[in-house]
Image 1 (tube, one colour):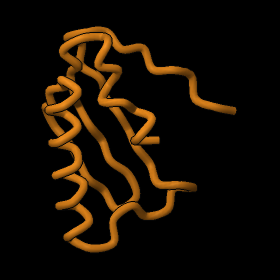
Image 2 (tube, one colour):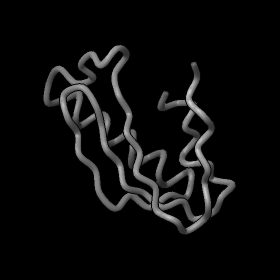
Image 3 (spheres, one colour):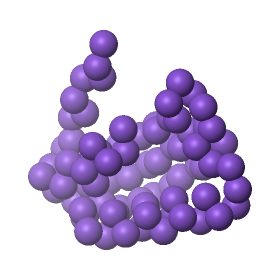
Image 4 (tube, rainbow, N blue to C red):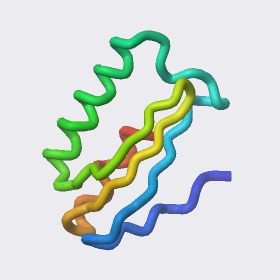
Length: 81
């Protein structure tokens, strides 16, 4: 069953959890974490989202972010599924 679409309201913080497929590991080396953070910064800037906090775990990521507008759609979440 697919996940319901996320409701995005401008200037309202969102708690996002991104998990690996079947809860498998997402990060295997320190470079993987660094690459993800660079990617996160790039997409946050281009989509107009403010990243307040993040936690990078071995098999999932927690993000606390605020979209500047509802049209930013949370940094194009299709890339983060």
